[in-house]
Length: 366
Image (cartoon, rainbow, N blue to C red; front, side):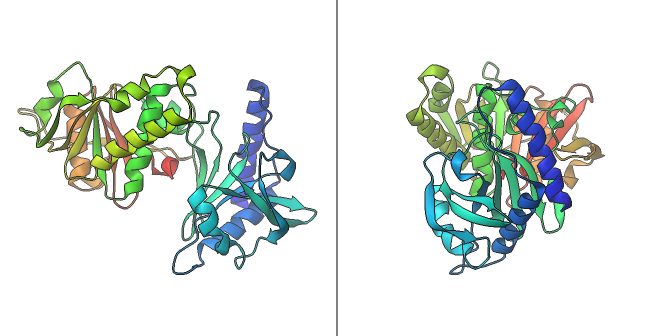
């Protein structure tokens, strides 16, 4: 019940913020008891198998009268682990949410929805025994905003003030939903999500487009360099907001997935801050005369987490160590590193601490 109570308190605050700052009517805030019931049902469903696969389901706690163009079941389904896994193949492929609401003292799945209103509580099954609780974005083209990650009996609440951390990167602020209207970081967010999703691990270096200094920190020749630079993603990012529609969103997603896919190759993928692709498969090498990094500040966007100083080898393998070294030498650059186990780290230079900061953000990308 502690998890449900904390989640309910978050949505109550979020609902109030929307009412004070937006003309859009948010979804009704349900009780902690209903949230607990859906969490319990989702957790039990996550442990089941349906034809050899674990169910991938997303539950939206939403009243029928607040839904837009829902598919309504003739008979509502009880929230039982026997009924819900069979729905998974139908809704996961179509990116539908199973809509759940309380009817009297009972909780039932009454249909499916694609679009959800602001402040609607969504509980997604992402792995056996692992749930992510999130709410919809303030803009259609933005990612859902994660509120908490539940794994077994552990709960990680995403910190509302994570973006206020010392020298916090724009990517972290974007994923937290704290920089609405910022087109630039939306592209990095798309790339980060796609990098993590392909599951092979990878490194993406974001370097200034008007300087070649970063080339001193990679091995030459680069085997897969672009000439001219691949600029499709850059051109889409520059598209005026008023001209963006579903076709633009599809093109942006396709271009982002293509570049994120290149990070699965051995070596680093390099793009400019304007999202022009320079190369992939690049090997990072220490710059001549530059000392190897011995300390990194590590933070995580989770409530009550504290910054710690560790040796770079504590962060992972060669991929992480190389990213730390690169950012230490190229302080205007950013390095995004995905691990095969799902971890995701953003490396940037912290002027106030005079060291590289490693920000763990996988809890924000699920």
